[in-house]
Image (tube, rainbow, N blue to C red; front, side):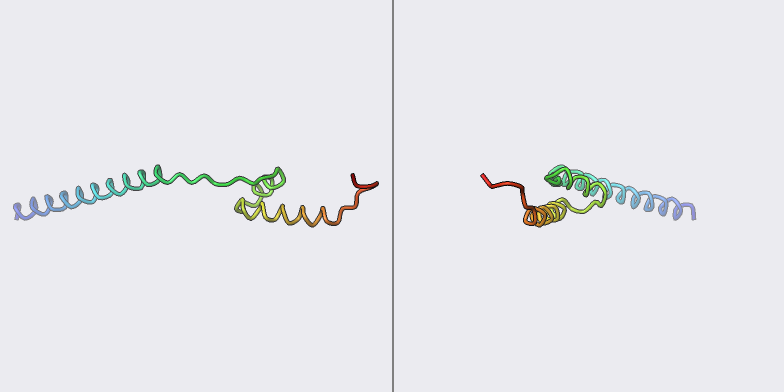
Length: 85
């Protein structure tokens, strides 16, 4: 009975070691992939866009498009005083 217990313990220990080795290999692969792929997030182009991004955490491309459209709409309605140069 003692032989069976020591064999079982050895198998469990060996299996645990293999799992730890697998986990270590996976961890190293993930670290290497993170270093390989450096993704820099775009930042909003304007100060207003940066404030919106800070408040809502919307992607920068979406914020830039919203600010661009609102600015265009606002400037189309703008009528300056005097004559144009």
